[in-house]
Image (cartoon, rainbow, N blue to C red; front, side):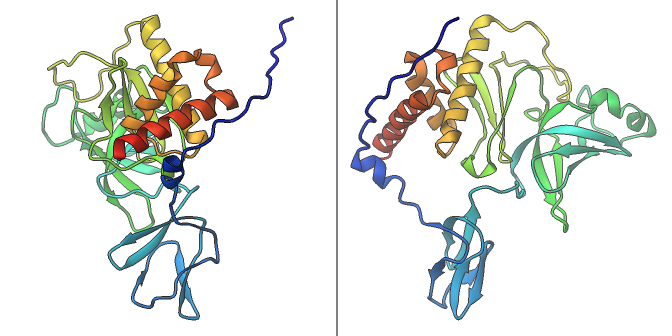
Length: 293
């Protein structure tokens, strides 16, 4: 029986430039954020003895005079315009319930989806009876947050052809706080795979498909066999994302691509070893700092 033996090695010294990159203002519950009374209290804070204190553990964020604390580990709190990836959990009357990693199940109304074929018309009773043929329990979808209800539940829509039912790929779940907000969350990476970075912490990896002009309404999925090369690329990307998440690094297209390139000297199964994670994440962090400088 083969036995794997690991020998201790000296860790690489982190350069000063990399250390400066991690100078975020971290606070824990009860820490004083500021004693200046000119700031407004936001989420994750409270006032006591004319001091602004943190009520959760996280990163302090300033928006003009508004101070809030973004929790490091929390459920997803949706905002209008967010791109999310979710799983259908229930089919109800004229709506689907979707798990989006938030406190409550999100709602996808029948009137907020494209009909198969892309036709535009009012939804009829026949469409309501055929809802399970569009989306059923267990299906993965990509959508955009349309509204936030008073109880915190989300209302979504898939009226654009870039949203809809997801086909073959791999779902990776990370903390929503690690997803960096960008202008677009759909990326075709040069390594041959595409990625959807959901603001809710659900990441979808799938092979890059050729662009087609058919108006399918977002319900037609490609079930053709995926080549071995594409499966290896997706598996490597998945392990790289987990490696970055283990080191609490923000996830976006550039950081994932740099980590993928840094992992090319290692086998796919070795990427999740702790010593390999430290090496490739350190190299990724250094490249990001060099790019910003």
